[in-house]
Length: 285
Image (cartoon, rainbow, N blue to C red):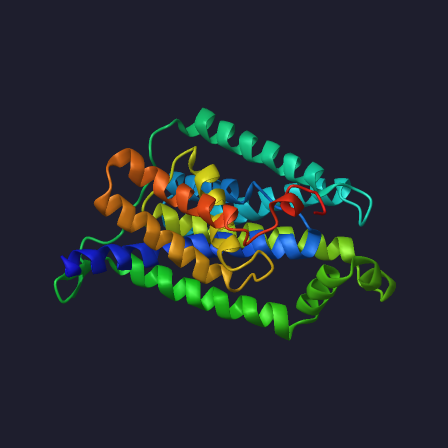
């Protein structure tokens, strides 16, 4: 019994790494622009879809590039709409939701509704009586490597300093010569890169389909709010927790409840008061 539970927990960790990668750009964008990008999950689906159509390294590379291109377009739209202290962030949130819907419709139109998944490994590692796919090790290695690089980006580069300064005081940062809107745009691009990598990992782990974008965004958002939307790096740990909740629910609960369990968990976190929902929606309460 304990072995089975441990196996579910490990599976949750391996999937949760991906949710952590999605949580990072959500939290990073929130502290930088006071808004949320609801198209993050869509970038991941775009990357996975292209990698499915074109096998091999070329497909992976093109998938990530496509995710970045999608984030660039959203970044251009958002920067055009959003002006420091003059536009309600809710406008930008709604714009990104529109893009997310468009991506979902495009993937459905061109690729259909069939699930997309690749299983590159036929052998498994044995950890005692627990079987683990080598893909799980790849997920963890990539996730931890990106976490280290993101830490360096935030705290060891001038762009990271500009990003943190823009988050603390937009007007003060602009008066100090920091190109605030360029920093905002760069944050969208970083989000597209991370989401693209997450989409590739999802394709090779549990698979994806045209409607996965919304679920990925919700999981990433839930991961971010677990430890506060203002802590991008800690959102990675939140992603692991969401992954564990999902895996354990799938293992022990009936189908319908298992699907709803992660969303219910996120709801409980939201109503617990750990995050200012009014502010996320564009208010200042």
